[in-house]
Amino acid sequence: MSLQSRREYLAKIRGRYKRAGRRHKTLILEEFCANCGYHRKHALRLVNGKGTSAKERPGPKALYDEEVVQVLKRLWLESDQLCSKRLVSALPLWMPFLKVPLARQKQMRGISAATIDRLLRPFRAEHRRKRLGGTKPGRWLKQQIPIRTSNWDIKQAGFMEADTVAHGGDSMEGNFIWTLTFTDVCTGWTQCRAVWNKGASGIQAQIKRLEEELPFQIQAFDCDNGSEFLNHALWGYFTRRKQPCGFTRSRPNHKNDNAHVEQKNWTHVRQLFGYERLDQPELVVLMNEIYSQEWHWFQNFFCPTMKLEKKKRMGARYHRVYEKARTPYARLMQSREVSAEQKALLRATFEGLNPLKLKERLEQKLSQAFRMIQKKQSQAFSPSTAGVAS
Image (cartoon, one colour):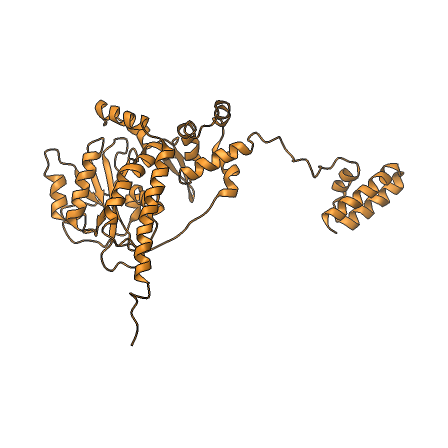
């Protein structure tokens, strides 16, 4: 029996049940349970008129209406789908630019991450793709460069992790673009640069440019075992300066040793350029313009990140406690390693930025980059250039 038929049947017998005597009520109730498959207690509530109405939603009235859902949806999409715990911290930063009324801003200040998860559940999307990696262990200076066997003091800015990301698509053959990712363990401040191939000279030149742009001094540098990092030129650059910094490497085949930068490889590189093969040298200039301007400002100034405070093993599981999500910029403003002059420059930069305009310019430049990629692909597979088997 369908739900509509049950409702019609209930409407017919409800009046007869209320007028019947005790003996006949028992017979009507047993017949109702047999025909509809209801439990006796539930059937009693229905025939007595105490069941839940189909038009009424159980529980308290909704606190957040459709307008709030649309604001959250737009913010979630504009911020590149931040998780709900990071989105809670991003709300005060983004709402003035989204032109949310003050009354609505006041209402949304108390929203929780769990509520955001529930409201955004219909819009969630999963993207899981895996491609080839291209960093092979190098043989240079392994005796001189020690393996980092313990965690750094992450309460200070300047402890950097570095890694490279291959934009080779499904093949590591030939020449293509690589991305150098530079991240600070304490603050999460991350900067990226594109290089043609991954030669030691190109990597070292980009590292020098990145260091000049950092608002703090590098105290230690940690990398994987790739030959682009383990070479005499880079080792001498870090160890033979007036104020030498530590130069260490991770254990081979242990990505968790560089967990901070490995995470940024996904959020700052793969989510931006995907897994396409980028084998056009002219793309390097455009990618570096995106990395050094829109993407760098967008991620470091307007996208809060979470940091692990402590981890405790409880039986077979770990219990992790995270601090409140903050942007890398907010952490730098509270860091003792950043000078007052640098903080003033950071504050002036932040006050002159608009995340919505940054995202708009970013999308325009990304569209330009992917048009160049598609043009190259269409030329490669055009009939005029395709070989004909004899």
